[in-house]
Length: 167
Image (cartoon, rainbow, N blue to C red; front, side, top):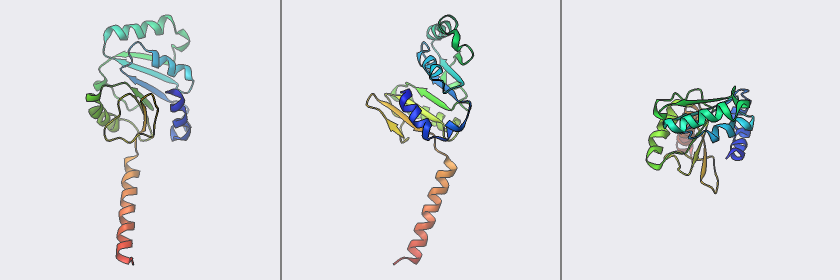
């Protein structure tokens, strides 16, 4: 997953930022948060988990096993629907099929254009992946709605111009 993510970051405008934030929605025991911290491309790696036992495991691992990453990892016991994602540059999710559509709406509403979403196993309905893996990982880039709107209007203007002055 991180190899694919690094490739996407290489072509993304996010790589110009010196301080990237990684967020794992449903972080479980924190493995992915620690892997993100070890990659060295994120200044902060945050895990959100609603299950108090899994949250406690992630928090314990942070305190006991990963002191090297204390400054760059954070864990919160929180419902993903109540998390504000505006600070996130990269979001990882391993959601189940039924939540992916409403989660896609939340991500599109809250993430900055150009942010990257990595979904394991389940695709996000209505989103076009920038990349996929044979293991079922989907990589998405949150579109710049204004640019998409402008592109569509420009295309319509060109089509109207062609039809008015066409052959």
